[in-house]
Picture (cartoon, rainbow, N blue to C red):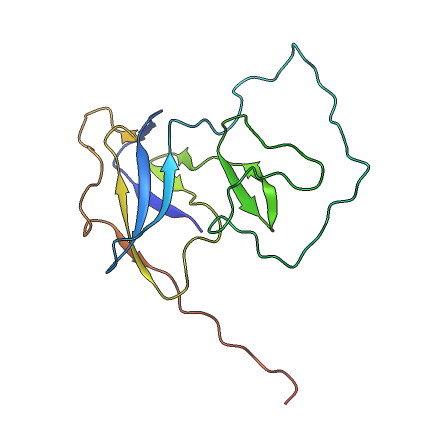
Length: 166
């Protein structure tokens, strides 16, 4: 899922502050994107020039539903060790080790926000807050979104199970 906010001019992405998504009605915090955590290294590591180490043990596939809602991204699996690199991580496809991701990407006048996977539920309404400084405009006209009524959205209703050939 992605959320988009379009401005009159190209916004700048800050290096601190939070984008938060709350459930309407309960006020429950559903997701939080901390812009002070980098998406990944900004330069290649030319000093260590490490070669990837592969485990001889196969990855254990389990039926446990490891998702961002119930597991911390970066939780080691198999013989891996915890990711302590302090980069943005999200769980995709139950791989708890986590994938690095960019929570906000600026394209022309639009900021595209990528929440963590599998945290929003079907058929619910949410609101978004954006701390001042997360996104800014050259003229200073954008000071964030703090109201619980300013940016709301609803997720689609779950798809119905289709029975074919009956």
